Image (cartoon, rainbow, N blue to C red; front, side, top):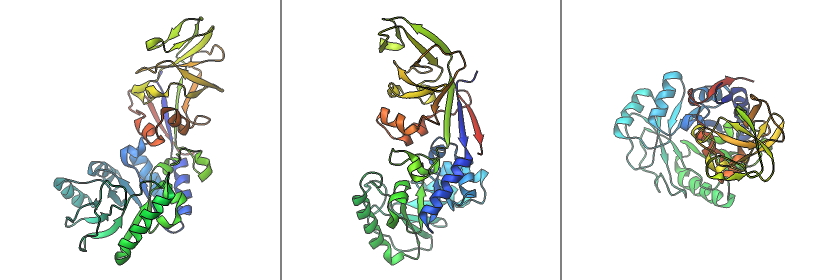
Length: 339
C-alpha cells in the first residue's frame, strides 16, 4: 500500500487558465509556477497553462527556470527573483527574462524593472535610464487580497511612474488583483494561486469559477476502539470520553499534513471525520462514526474537503499548505490526469 496518492488534474488547470484569460479581458495571462508549481508540478502545470492561453511562465529562481527550459524549449520564461552574476550568464544562454530591482541593468538579457510601490521588499523607487535590454516594468501588490484601497493606491503610483514608458510591457496584478481590481491588469497579470483552483481570498474558489487542481487521498490503515479514558497519539492530547472508534491514517507532517491541523476534518468514505490528537510524522487519527474496514478511502484534500478549510484551522494560507505537500515518490504516488 502506498501511504497516499496525490492527483493533479491538468484539465482543471486548463479550465482555470481559460477562466483567467476571460477575466483579464485582453491582458495576457502569465502563469506563476514557482516552488514546483505551488507543489503541483512545475513542468506539467506550465505546459498545460501555455496550452490553455497563458503567454509566459514565471518562476522565482534561475535554477527553476533552467529546469523548465530543458522541457519547454520554446516557452517564454521570466525569473522574478534576484539573480547572481553567474546566474545572469545562465539566463542569457537559456534565453530567460529577468526581473531586476536595482539600477544595474545586465546586458544581453531581457529585463523587467521592478518598482517598489508599497510592498517594501524587492524593487527601486524610480525607473533607471532606459536601455535596449529593458522590455517591461512591474510592481507587486501587497494587499490585493485584503485591502483594495491600498492596492488601488499602489496601482496609481505604478501607473503614474510608468506612463513615460507605457510602450513597454507593464504588469502589476497577482491572482487577487486580476479577479477584483480591473485597473491593475495593464498588459499582463501574473497569476499563481488561482491557476491551481485555490482562492487567493481563502474562500470558496467556485465563486470565481475556479476548480481545485490537486486532490490528496489515503486510506484507513487501522480501525480501533478506544475505551473511555484511553488515548491515541503523543502527549495524550485526545482522551476518549466514551467508547470511540478511531481510524489511523498513514499520513503525517512528513507528508505535509501539518501538526497544527488537529481539529480539521477529512472525509472517510462518505463521512466527514475530525482529526484528533497529535499529528505525528507518519500518521494521524480521526474519530469514526463506526468501525471502518481497512482500506476505506480517506480524502485529505479534494471534493468536500477544500484546502481553504484546512488553512483556516491551521491559521495560514492555502499557498503554504499546497507547497508543503510532499509528493516524493517514496512518500506518495503522484498521478496526473486530464479530465
